[in-house]
Image 1: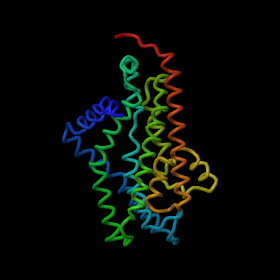
Image 2 (image 1 turned 120 degrees about the vertical axis):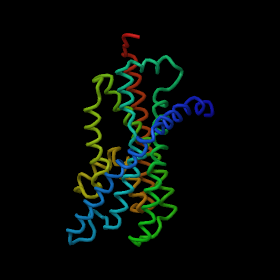
Image 3 (image 1 turned 135 degrees about the horizontal axis):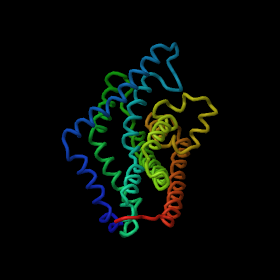
Image 4 (image 1 turned 90 degrees about the vertical axis):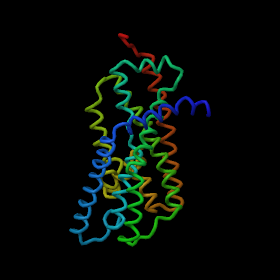
Length: 272
């Protein structure tokens, strides 16, 4: 374990240094990333304001405020794509180095994404999270989130991150077929916005679609940890959803290993 940490830590460190290299980009990222959640906030407030029912999709107006910003926090930390990195490596031909060097290509990509996660956590996720808790207590009168919910959320968030990066690694294998992934990546992001509950909570969909969505791994990326944070699951339900996340991690890891093994056997790199 120590040896692997020594090998893959520089990938994380270099990614973090790269993101912090330019101050203008650093501050611009913070400002631009906050537009989305505030637009969603005002949109949902208008929806609740125009409804005679105080509860929509199983969420009160106050809970929806928390859902919107916790969705932003969760997606910021979880949805760190590695498919773009794979596509770039394929186009440049540098993917061959993954076969020549004594490293695990997937682990090197995950290490870089962890560096990106740390960057996003400190700019600006942690400040949004603290601000949300203050807003909950002072304005929404909901009280501080129980420590048990926070700890369970962190556990679920960690598995959500693994589900996403392992899924994105599998998705990145398309780069070996299409080479250019820009269009596919945009389509993936748009589709995941709905399937993961990032744009609309899954509880707002018809019962039949809810059953389909929760069966897929995408609901485990954003919707599940946010609902854990809100305390929407009982003890048995929490054990079930966390178990489902763990199973998807195993399945996606096995699938990724299989696809990588098949593709590298057929890989041909020209030039040098």
